[in-house]
Image 1 (cartoon, rainbow, N blue to C red):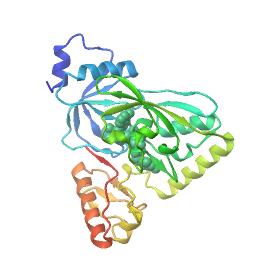
Image 2: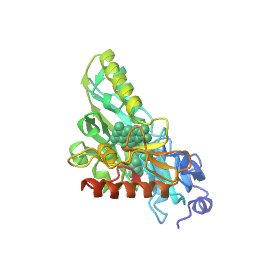
Image 3: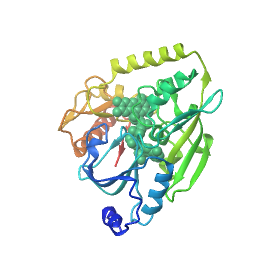
Image 4: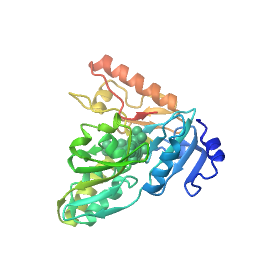
Amino acid sequence: MSDFSTFQRNNPDFPGEICIRYGEPMSKHTSFRIGGNVEAMAFPKNREELSLLLNWSGLLDRKPVILGAGTNVLAPDEGMEGLIICLKDCLDGMERLDDRRIRVMAGVTLSRAAMFAASQGLSGLEFAHGIPGTLGGGVYMNAGAYGGDLESVCREVELMDFRGNLYTRTGEEMDFSYRHSCLESEPAIVVSAVLELEPGKEEDIRGRMKALQTKRLASQPLNLPSAGSAFKRPAGGYAAALIEQAGLKGFRVGDAAISEKHAGFAVNLGGATAADVKKLLEEVSRRVEAHSGIRLEPEIRIW
Ligand SMILES: Cc1cc2nc3c(=O)[nH]c(=O)nc-3n(C[C@H](O)[C@H](O)[C@H](O)COP(=O)(O)OP(=O)(O)OC[C@H]3O[C@@H](n4cnc5c(N)ncnc54)[C@H](O)[C@@H]3O)c2cc1C
């Protein structure tokens, strides 16, 4: 069984309260504004609905694909079969646990989590203000910026396996490293995370967040669709500097281009396809290697 809509029609007791859309364009759910239609996209509201959905989808041929805010993915032009489970705004909520710790649900954006921490007089999440993805997507790839990352504050992650069972991992067990966690090889869904922060003055925390936001606005092409940094930082250099040195600022394939403002970003100038972006990344990687001997690896998740 791989056709989710047929499956749902043939199973009239499927929980109808779970919001499912058929033929939904991925371009509506990715910051690149790229991607064809998906067979079915589900929007569970809470962990109970997520667990129910996973129990049912166990009867399908293929495992569901998890989507957060879609700010780090390149979705295929031809669309996707099977079930996509979108968690942005669905697994919602944040709470203060004690004098240093907060729990953040996976669907909350990192910017909102940083604002919440500031409002609680807790410092350490300032780096995350301005990262447009969700906490879940951030844990998946250990999101970071300006010297901070989730590894440094994440103490516990609540996970759900693809049969709907909940379990927890400590921060150490998440095997975090630069833009990596164990979730790249362990099929599981982030439901929430406990973050440990330092008490601080709300005014100072907000001041640091504002300064980082100003830096972002000045240096990044935030007016154009992208998925953030196109490449991981290689050992011994910065991707943006290597791309610029290879003379590739503004380099284009179709409507996909290396940003004129920040060479680390691949942007969609309007009508870029996933094929354009893939070709652009391959060509940039090839030319940078020819110029500097350093091979760039994509940071963007190519689906
Ligand atoms: C303008 C811009 C600026 C950015 N700046 C930064 C930056 O400074 N630092 C940085 O690190 N990143 C940055 N990014 C990239 C992106 O925002 C982060 O990688 C973010 O953590 C991705 O979260 P997401 O919810 O959008 O994940 P998605 O793009 O939806 O998914 C990314 C991956 O995570 C998986 N995933 C998502 N949610 C879950 C979950 N709940 N459980 C398990 N797996 C999940 C998906 O299956 C996918 O493989 C930027 C992006 C943009 C567009």
